[in-house]
Amino acid sequence: MNQTACNDVVEWRMQPSALCLKYELPNSSSGFGACNGTAQFHCQNNSLVLNTVIYEHEGTYMEKIISQDGSVKKIYITLKIISPPLITNVSIISTHSTLIIMCEVRGRNASTRWLKDGVALQNMNLTLMVHEPTWRDCGNYTCLATSEGGSSEAHVNINGAICKKDPDIGHGNGISIWIKSAVICVLGLCIIPICIKKYFAGTCCNKSRTPEDIALQVIAEEQKTDTPPSAHTDPAEADTLTFE
Image 1: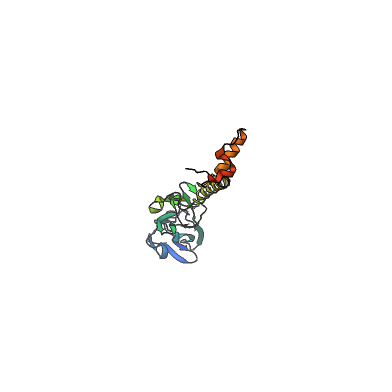
Image 2: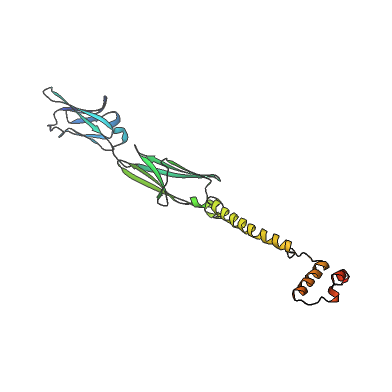
């Protein structure tokens, strides 16, 4: 700023025309509008000092210097506030079918993303929704807000009833059920032909053989050994044999 002897009249205005601060003799300054109560003036260099800077102070300022000789000089300065976003709150809403995590961020042009147990999720919104949550969705969630002024983050841990479910029930159990079903089907395909074969061979399901079947089997065995059949194995008399 220009050096003065504190004898000039100085006005600071927020564009387009809002008067922010005015300094004039005798060494007094007054704040107006948005700068009222937050601004100070240093006449040694005609500088405007904002004690508490808020986003409403952003914009273009005009400094108008009126010298004692009546000359006027105008200087334009643009104020841009750069600060990291502020996460004010992270809230959780959980029902039997949906898990909702909401991140509240204060700051301009802030982008948001979510992480679960340190791994980035494909969600860039302030609200993270998980449908049909299971034990696999439990863990530590992070809301990360970033802007040109920096970044900030907040953490929330999800636990409770959904974390106690049986791992075989819920999300991700489709593969397990499919494998079990496949094993049962394979075993069934192997057992059925064997049972059918044994059934027709007369040895399945406790099928009882008739006396005629036994007599024919005895005759066949004796013929193999070339032994003359005995009287009680004569096929003609087979039906008169008594079996205990």
